Each structure stands twice: as C-alpha cells, then as structure tokens.
Length: 158
Image (tube, rainbow, N blue to C red; front, side):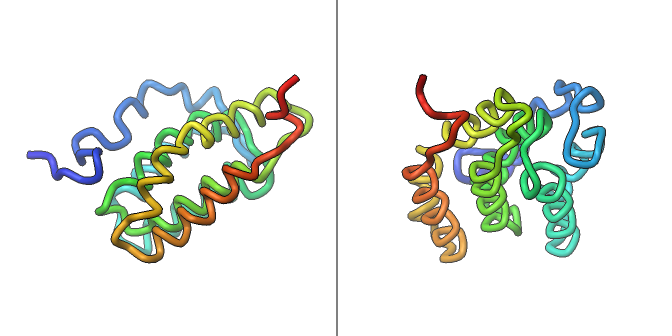
C-alpha cells in the first residue's frame, strides 16, 4: 500500500529515475552515476542521511553551476519538494532556487534547460506557499519571488 502525500504517492516518488542514463551525465565533479542514490536518500533517509545527501546534490548540481545532470534531476527534486514524508523539503526548495540562480555560461543550452525545468514548477511553488510547514512556506515564497523576477541571458527571449 502506497502512502499518499501531496499528489505523490510513495510508490510513485522518483518514478522513472532508473530510465535516466546517469552514467552518461555530468555534474560539478564528474560522472553523475551517484545522483540517483543521493536522491533516494533524500526521499527515504533519516533526517541526517537526507541532509547529507542533499548537501552532496547541492554541490554537484547547483551551487557552482548547472550541468546536464541538473536538468535530469530537477523533476525528481520537485517530487521531493511535495512529498510530506521527505524531511528536508525546505532545503530541496532552496536547491531548486539555487539552480535557477546559477548559470553555466560555456553551456548556455544546459543553463536554459535547467532554468526551464525549475520554471515549469511554478504551479507547484504556488501550492507550497500555502503548505502547513512554515519552513516549506518560507522557502517556497523565496522561490516564487525568484521565479517571478527571473531574468538571465539564457532565458531571455530572442
């Protein structure tokens, strides 16, 4: 029996992750083959394990720049942000904001794709701004403001 959360059941969270060729993707430090394991630890780990995994993902996917692995990971980060049993939802939302705010000038197409993946979650952010958890609400309000004011070279209409 699946646990029902905000539109995402535990049986469906991170669904499709195994179909991504993570070994062919890169992050800030090389191969992205360990990204699925970190996403799983964020989803199902205890608070300490989840926080450590999210810290790794932040370094790999969004703090320095964005990468092709970032683009692939964003839909799964949205899954995590809306799943009540995930212990680090505010931090997941903060990572989504970091991805939106960072660039990768040598790979402008990757930057555009990563930003668009975050921007596609605007409806989800609206729901998170009224979440029961005050930390989730605060992070979502910050992300909503970042989305509404987002302007960058990659996303600027031509």
